[in-house]
Amino acid sequence: MSSVTDNLKHIAGELPSGVTLIAVSKTKPVEMIEEAYAAGQRVFGENKVQEMVDKYEQLPKDINWHMIGHLQTNKVKYIAPFVALIHGVESLKLLETINKEANKVGRVIPCLLQFHIAQEETKFGLTLEEAREILESEAYRGMQNVRIAGVMGMATNTDNEEQIRAEFRHLKEIFDTLKREYFPGNADFKELSMGMSGDYPIAVQEGSTMVRVGSAIFGARQYNV
Ligand SMILES: *Cc1c(COP(=O)(O)O)cnc(C)c1O
Image (cartoon, rainbow, N blue to C red; front, side, top):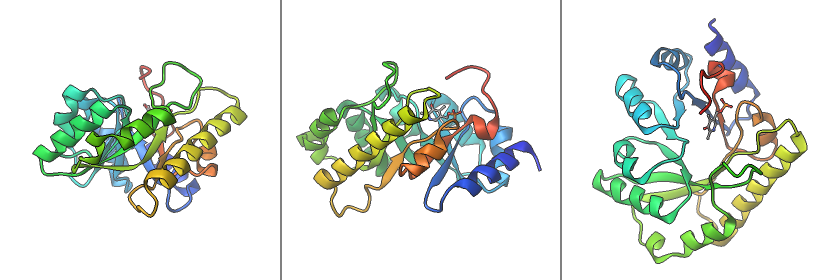
C-alpha cells in the first residue's frame, strides 16, 4: 500500500462514525488525489479558488469539494456551480454573494460560519456578536440559496494541548449557543468543523463532526499556506 492510502486508512480508523474526514489536498498534485480517491476518499478540501476549479475539472465528478480557505467575493462565481460546502463565511457581504451566485446556477450552497477562536491575530473569523448580527439581518432572512450548516474554526498553532482544547471547547459552546438561539429543531445546522493534522484527536474529543486533515495524509507541503 502507498503512504497516502496507509495514512487515510489509519486516520479514518481513528475517527468515530459520524465524523467526516476532509482530505485537504491544497498544493498537492492531481495524482495524489487520485490515489486517495482510489482508496475510497470522496471529500477533499482546497483553499484557493483557481486550484480547486482546475482539480474539479480534471477529477471524477462524485468528489465533494470543500472550500476551506479565505474566499474573496469576486471569486465565488467560479466555484458556485459545484462546491459542496464553504467553510469560511465570515461576513454578511460574502454570504450575500454566495446567495446571489448560487441563485444564478439554481443551487442552495451549504455554508459554515467561521469563528475566530485562536490567539493569533492572523486567523480569520467572526465573534459571536458579529454572527448574531448576520443571522438577525433582513438580508440573511431573505436568502433562499444558502443554508447555514454549522460553524468552523482553527485553534492556535501551539504545542499547548490545554489551550487547543479550550479553544475547541469555546467553538463548541458557540455552536450550541447558535443552535439554541437560531436553529432549534433545524437538522441542517449540525456541523462543527474543527481539527487539523496536529490537533484532530483533541477536536474529535471536543465534539468535532468534520476534521480537515492535510499533511497527515499527503505529507508536508512545500510552502506554508
Ligand atoms: C491547510 C488547512 C488545513 C489542513 O492543515 P494540515 O495541518 O496540513 O492538516 C485545515 N484547515 C484549513 C483551514 C487549512 O487552511
